[in-house]
Image (cartoon, rainbow over all chains, first blue to last red; front, side, top):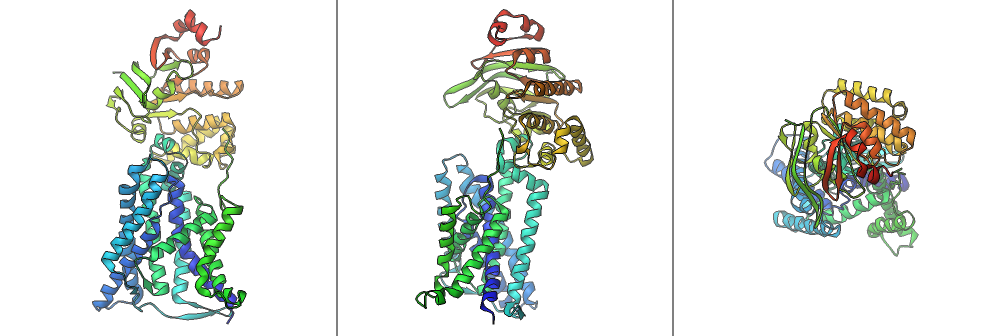
Length: 309
Length: 236
């Protein structure tokens, strides 16, 4: 088996999940210049809700194909996460809209801890496993192996990213979002209710996070109340890597981070003569983040558009 | 009833009172200019009318509606548009998208398309550059875009804040010709302008603002003959 190709495939799958989460960070940042640190926890809640629904359906012996059961779980996760995203913005961030920048940032960290603890109270501290109801097919490609779940993750991610890009670039709502990102006051003069646009941005980002959460738990077969922390941190890194505020950047950053992490995990043992094992894979994300911030503080596609007065 | 009616309006920034108990009215179809020195509170007054600033005291009625407590995104639905100081175009959006934002409140796509084409005919430079980011336009082109964008909301009253600021004389001429045409189509205009001579020549009536209060108002012709105004604002 070709290890290099295999690691690239694994990396792209992982990276597309990062990218979906990173899009949520970057959309909110683009409009509010706020790092919504609670976004990782929204992903976790998506995973937890979907697993609850899926387990309940499986436990009740519902006679439906596994894929359909997972779709029900996914739908529930999306709806709950949309509600959570909307509520977070409404309760925690909106009252601080005109406060100094540090206040909403610290609040975001607070929200993140609150959500973790709520999840712990509801679902407990133990790992929850994903029922083995999805197709387990494996396919040969370029000397490597790709599973049905991996293919599904890649396809769904690409579709969602294309859909989001179309929405932001072409639709009336997307135009209003971009206008609000640039100047909420002027957008207001055009008839745009900035609060509505901001709420919709959180709802949209949270829906993507929900999908990502379901994907991660389906991929690793596990979910845990603390899973949102590292996932969120990596997705945030991906957003910064690509240039925060830039949608294409978030996708690029996510994919890049996934691939780098995967290649790093695959080769670190050989590179260090076995001193460091693949459990060091998380180091790479942050190592790359530090490098990018050193040499390109605005990220790979960071916006530096000239504006004439 | 007047199209715009302002009573005892005061606006403060913290402890500083930028607009002090202003009373004014503007009739349907009227062109009124507001002149005054830098910092007299002209921009603050326009922003307050358009719903961009909280009002401390007093009331504003527009077209029979109390708009004192309304936000700008609600006021635009009633037919009031502001072309803000510094033009306020969305520099990262294309020219076309900026115009589309102007028509944000409208659903009659065909008419919007028609009016957009009219704007391109009037300002060919905008048409040529419709797919470019608006930030790449020159100052004068941006001003045209800002005016065109405001017109696409189909306002009954257009507030213009310093449309000639920083523009070359030729461009100023074009902009003021446009303002004339807009007024001819029945849109009322409230114009804030540093160039008092030009402002009075464009409008039927003038208001003079000093330290947040209206100190003088009257027909433009009368004001233009006023010795104090000539001394303070014409630089004579």
